[in-house]
Every structure is written in structure tokens, then in C-alpha cells.
Length: 340
Image (cartoon, rainbow, N blue to C red; front, side, top):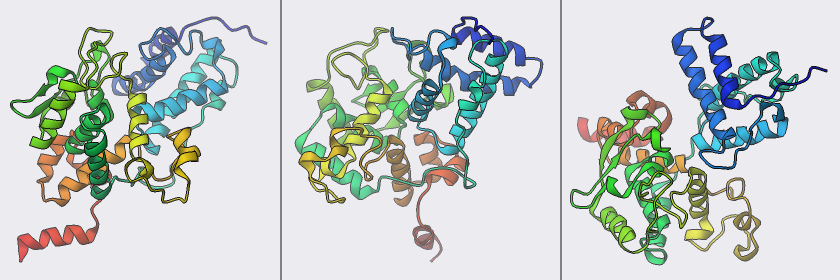
């Protein structure tokens, strides 16, 4: 049996990229660097002092499964994206086997999801009725709380969870009723489309009041590890994206905002409510369903497609393929007003 040689994930990645440099195009190399950088980020503990994997020798099937779940949730990735990410990871694992960094056949433990349809994307959205009911509940019982501010920003701007995570107090302009989304990877907050995702988004009068009242009375007066003042906070600083996703799963459970259960569960002893929020209630939603619902809602209100594209930081063709969930009947009726 070959003895493994200790090596940290970052060094292993550097060796892999150096090996592939003369084998693939620069665009492919950059794509592999980007995809595998998430594995290194996961291994190092996502900027924490508690690394998940210090030595590639210790990589196991269980740890690979943990990474797979983390990556799916961290990026809110659809099946196609996960297939691409995990396929690249499998190639990386084969290389690591060759240099005696991981146990033999580790690459076979990398689960690559199959795509059963052309798009491989989720179709679920948070319908306007659900969003309104949830916001009204927050307005009545949790006014200007962190979750109220989070849901208000997500629904009215259609921002990704990573975008909301990146916001600082200074990014909110109460006078001009705007939010400024900035790409700041050097201090641990990134926008999905990098600097191209930077934008200024107008906020409604109501949304502005909620955010302003949250900042005035309910925001924890904390800074993050880089000395920045996060807009959305916990008592310990800027919440990580996983925590923010858990808040969304909790809020979108019908029993949270309506005190009713469509699945005939007793709210007081419902195991979905008590335990794993993500894998639990069939009626709760991940953050991207809110984004998808918000985009569909604005399009249904006859907002110009280019304006929605710019506001939500999504290319027009991507918007058509993955985000516009209006029925053909709705589209037809909207067109009728222009041609009759």
C-alpha cells in the first residue's frame, strides 16, 4: 500500500493547476481554478479558525459528501451547476491520487449528479401571495427585525443571498432610497458576477422605512472580522450565508407566517419545525425561490425586461430560460394590451 504524503488543499490545488497549464486552454484553466477554489474555501473553514480539512490525506467519502452538500447550499446551485462542479472535483481527485495526496479510488467517491432534462434547473418560486402574507406577518409580529429586513430586501430587490450578505450599513442610502451592491472579495464578501454585478438598486418608500427602522432599533452594533459594519447582523457580527439561508427556510414554512399547516402536522410537535429546516417542511423555500418569484412578479407587473435584468443582475437570456415563470396565458394577456 502506497504511503500518503501530507499536503494541504491549497498546495494540492496549485500543483494541479500547474500540471494542467499546458494541457488545457487558459479559459478552461481559469474555470477549474474558480470551481476548485470553493473546495479550498470549504476545507479552510470559510475564513474561520476551524478548518474542516487540513491534510488531503484525511479526505474520505463522508467529507466529500459534506462538501457536496455545503457547495450546493453555499452557491444555491441547480443540478447542471452541481454536475459541472463535481465533475471538476472528480478530475482533481484523480490528480491527487497520482501524487499520493489522497487514498486510492477517492475520485470514485465523488458523486456527480445526473441531469434528467435540458435545463436541470428548479422551477419553484415564492408566489406573490405567499411573499405578501409573510411580509405582513413580519410587519405585524417582527417589525424591523433582522429577518424582516432580510425578507424585505430579498423580495423587493430580487437579490441573491450572497448579495444581501455583502451589504454594509453604508451601502444603504436612506435619503435617496437606494441600496449599493459592491463586490469586495478581499474582505470576504463577493457578488456572483464579480465587479459586473455591482449596481445601485432603488428601494420603495415602505422598504426604506423598514430598513431604516431596523438600523435604528434592532441592528446589533457590531463589526465583522474586517472592521466593516454589516447591514444584516447577529450578535457575533456578519452572519454567514448558511445562517441566512436557514432563516429563509424557517420564515417560508407556512406555520411560521400563517399558524396553519397544509400537511396536517401539529405545529407544537412538528419535527420539521424543530429539526433540519432545509430537508424538512415540503412547503418551505430556499432563498433562490424568493429571487425567482420576485423576478416573475416584476415581469408580471409589466416592468421592462431590461430594467428587471439590470436590477436583479441577471442576463436577459438567463432571465428568459431560468427566471421568467409566467404562464403562457399571462404573457399573452400582457401582450394583448399592446396590440389591441
